[in-house]
Image (cartoon, rainbow, N blue to C red; front, side, top):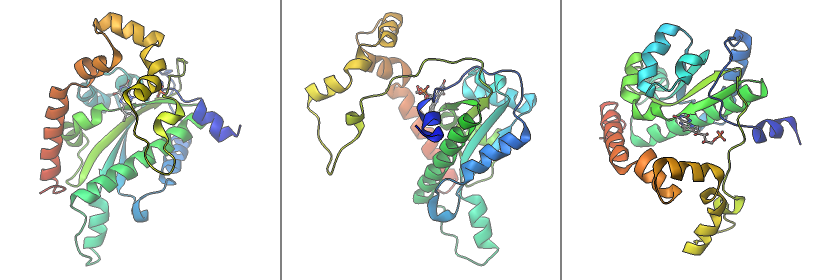
Length: 250
Ligand SMILES: Cc1cc2nc3c(=O)[nH]c(=O)nc-3n(C[C@H](O)[C@H](O)[C@H](O)COP(=O)(O)O)c2cc1C
């Protein structure tokens, strides 16, 4: 297997880090690798804020629901969809302002995640460990304020990064045929779905989660505990309001 594929197949999220910092040259190589990702029109409608100080981590930590990785990791990266920089360049060149609409928020999200995933692969190739944090989207408004992001810049994801102090087991994935469709989308029957999720539904981890949550199946752990309808709707409403204030939505 090529070293690149070995890195990819070895991936696991790392949530505990050694105390040692990331040398600046390693950090910059990893960030630069991020910028080599494909991006919309080569406009790079994203930015990243690098947090290393204890003071700024302390401000970010509650906005990530005190997930311990924020304070423990030597480096926290907040990746944002950013049309502000590109629009500024357009403005000083007498070019029409045309990127504050929903399409460009989506393009900013796409560019942000491609940038972030390239960073992730590069970091792991350098022997670093990392974890993405989804709390960024839940608290986007507050995180943008703390990081002093201007209008047109919306935090999309966070990566905590450092040298690993744990080596967890690889987490499971659905069988390839669950996610791959050849030529046209194959619609699954109830039985197909049961089979595709069989290993997930019957894993040791799932058994433990059902016990802990006193629920009959894993799907209900997701809907009743992890990502509830009430939370999903409240977070969506907050995000829509933020996009309106940032002129991405009318
Ligand atoms: C967008 C995104 C958000 C995530 N948010 C969190 C998070 O808030 N906290 C956490 O511990 N892990 C988070 N993760 C990590 C996932 O839980 C993890 O990638 C998944 O369980 C698969 O495990 P693996 O990365 O070890 O293969 C996130 C991953 C992604 C891509």
